[in-house]
Image (cartoon, rainbow, N blue to C red; front, side):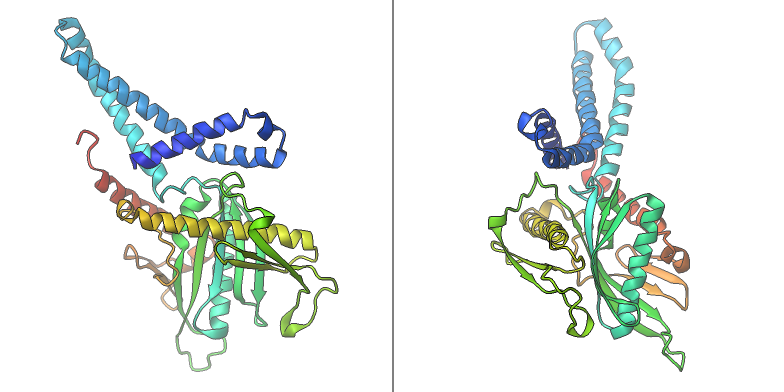
Length: 358
């Protein structure tokens, strides 16, 4: 954890310098990206700076306590308990802020919801998940934007891609990555039998342009006619965009907008997030032993949660937690689930770190 905090502080210091750079100041889009990342790190970096200052003060007091000067020893022994307590309080705050890993301070993320097994019922469940996250975001004051959607005739979604922006957005929504299973009686079921279907959710931290800058030379751009259900054209002009990233082979298509320019802008945002996520996962694999205490690998095949409608029950299998408040959670009160996951992660992190004096 100390290594990660040092990296965050170094990055924050670098961003402080960039905000004074004439080249950055003269580029409004780059300045906005730098300012966003700087703002996202400000609280954590400031807290860690205070923590390091208190640690240094405590070290000096302990040296004084071993002095041959009786007055210095008495003064040091009087101040050590208070400074030690302050150090513990700051460390506890740092633990709380770093729950969720090194991307916990991200203020933007991309969410991809896909219907799994279960046909039309799975697509309807994917819509229910979208509406739950949308309502939760409204409560939190987060900004939500639909980037791409594939609706079904019954009103569900085969898949839908969203972006979220707001304070603590990835710290909370990062826990949603994985397999979600629903158990309920479909409207089309005449015998009252409970059916099981599923959907997957992937949440990716959205990097700033200054972190991963994908240039036009890095991808192939194909332009084609957007098509609707049944293959019919929804736009007479070629406005749909497909980007293929050369290095990783990642492909992103976007056709929701009538404007080619808007589709390209959306596709680039999704491409950046997916490329960043791939690099992030590769880095995580290299440092897997250091991260065993953290939850949230983003494994889409992992079944993380069951939504049982007949019992009004939600069960999160990662922490074996069950809440009989499914109706409230689907209405947007996801905070009660997020709090349980964060508390569990926080306790694991504290146990893994041990005492500061060890």
